[in-house]
Length: 193
Image (cartoon, rainbow, N blue to C red):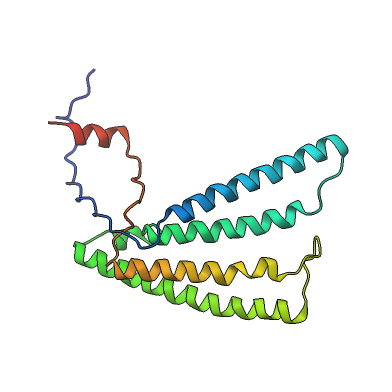
């Protein structure tokens, strides 16, 4: 039994790939920050596992630092996702219809993301001010709480600026976006005569 293209149902033509646009601030910043944070998380967790295995005790600070690093990782990765126009959306609506509609929806989505993270930056700055004003300390290791809370407004502003950049680029993803891998069937179709 042989498989032939004659028995396969016709496929819809694939849309042309969107041409990426340049960003003013390179996405390598977010990419390298992600790599560094993931490496720190792995090292901290591995060290804690070794200490727990050999001494039956664990480092008290690892959980607090790991939670902080995971939050920073989510915010940094969110910034890169917004710049690459890969943030969460309902693709049925966002990728359907003519290109002008897709771009309008991408700009609308970017504007809403910018408003959300702008609001988040303002509100988290108020939390930061409270942490500084009242001398809050972290529950696990007793360091000043603002060491952790200062990153939320900073990273919220970064995401907001990436969203504004996406909106100004007309919904085009960033230039150094990584192409998503395709299945072997799609690759075979692309190289078919």
